[in-house]
Image (cartoon, rainbow, N blue to C red):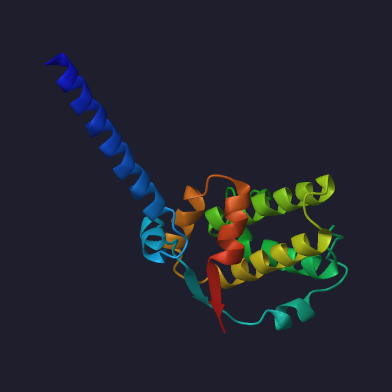
Length: 179
């Protein structure tokens, strides 16, 4: 009786292993794209209306702009970014001291974090200067255009980003500007 039970158990185990192997083979078959796509959740893409910032860039005085590691254009755009996203209010009426306020602090902090990350990556040699300049220019363009838009979902995605490379990816890959 024990011998029969042992033989039955061996056959059932072999049958289960064969089914598991066939299932694994079917799931990893490269021609079957339906199972692969259904397992991956697509990330949302954000669309914002865009306008050209060339008029603003041309109106900036060269005396106000400092130098930047990514070049003159990035320096001009960063100056515009700072001027559009920050403003000063008096702390107390009659007191000459001013407090700097930030419009959309989530977006502002994300852009600053991306800038620091890209500068460090270039310094370490992880990415090229041209690639970093291109990415940061796109981030600044997006920041200009989302200032007056409804960005609740976008800001939520920013706060959910775990690290700076995913934050950079959010700005450069998942945002579409519609001109």
